[in-house]
Image (cartoon, rainbow, N blue to C red; front, side):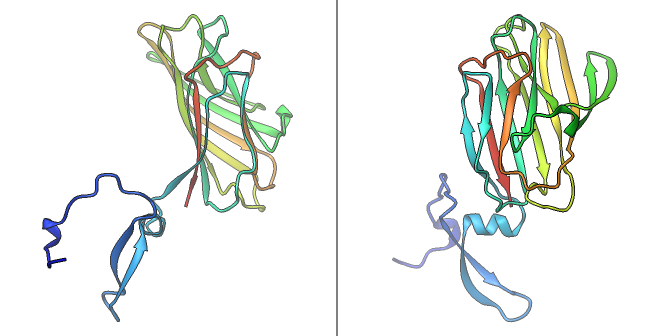
Length: 211
C-alpha cells in the first residue's frame, strides 16, 4: 500500500472495541511504537462503559444475575412503562436478592413543576416507571450509578436521577440516593414493581460496567 497521510485514509464510522489504534508509549521519555485496542485505550482514560446485559421484561421484575466483579462501578439505565391503572409505578432496586426494606436507606429530592420536596426512609424504592393513565407514549426514565460495587469494605451506595410525566404538562424529577447496608460484593440486581404491575412491551433496562 502506498504511503498516505492520515488525513487521506478512509474514515471508519463503525469503530468496534476490538479495533486497533497506533500509539506512542512514553513520548516524553523513551518513545516506543505500540498498538492498543479501542477498549483498552478508553479503559486507560477511565472513559469505558461496557454493556453487561439488556433486559426487556414483560413481567413484574427485571433481574441481572451473575454480575462479574471486574469493573469499578455499575451503571443502570431504564425506559419503562407498566400496566398499573395509575400515573406511575414505583420501582425497587434490590441487591443480591435482599428484599428486606430495613436493609436499605433512601433519600429522594423531588421536583414537581415549581414545587420541591424531600423524603428519607428505609426502602429500596428509588425509581419510577409511568403507568396506564400517564400521557400516551410517555415512559419513566432514569439512571443509577453504583460505586465500588465489588468492594467488601463499605456499605454499597448508589445515586442517580429518575423522571416521569403524570399528566400533560406536569413532570416529576427525582434526585435519589440509595444505601444498602451490606459490605458484600454485588453480583445480582433486581428491579421490581412495588405494586406487582407488569412492564409493557418496549420497557428496557440496561446494565453497564464502568472501568
